[in-house]
Every structure is written in structure tokens, then in C-alpha cells.
Image 1: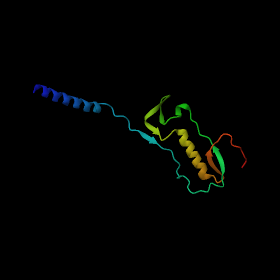
Image 2: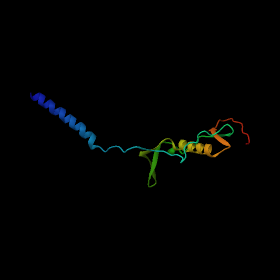
Image 3: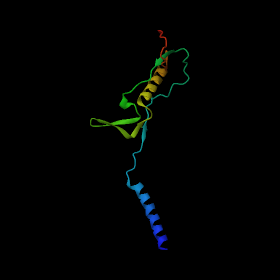
Length: 123
């Protein structure tokens, strides 16, 4: 009987300590994702057959900016945020916006992925 009583207390202490272990620590920050977009939706239904191709290379960011974590500054020190993240790498998001803006605003060009070795012709 004494043994069963001790086992019950041991189980209760184990459950209570497991519950308290999760409650005593600081909760992790809520993660938020930042999205960059144009005010207008992507252009739909435009005739791109008569446009000249405009080769577009991928943009490159500085090495410390080439990640999805937003950098925060404290004095002169930049540290990656544990709360805010970009939806994708900033250079990819900006490149997508530039391509979309060219596509929507130009009647002469349509952006395409740059291919090395293309012959260049004047428009």
C-alpha cells in the first residue's frame, strides 16, 4: 500500500514538473512575415507577342542581406531578427517587382530570364 502511495506521488510530481517546465520559460517571439508588393495587381491579358525580349539577370544582395531574416540595428551592430522575416530573399522579391513593373508599364519590352550567349540586336 505504501509503495502504491509513493508511486502515485511520484507520478503527480512528474506531471506537475512537466507542466511547470513549459510555463516557467519565456515564450518564443511570434514570427511575422513581411511582404513587398506593387499597389496594382499583376498585369493580365496583355499581348506580349509583339514586344522585344529584355534580358533580366537575377539581382544580388550583399552577403549579410542574402537571407530571409530582417536585420535590426542596435547602435552600430546589425543582428538578424527572431521575430520578423521576409517572405523570400530581398533580392528575389525586388527583382520580381521590377520585372512586374516593366511588364505592366512598357509596350515595347517584356522581361525574360537572361541567357548567356544571346545575340544582341538594336530595337
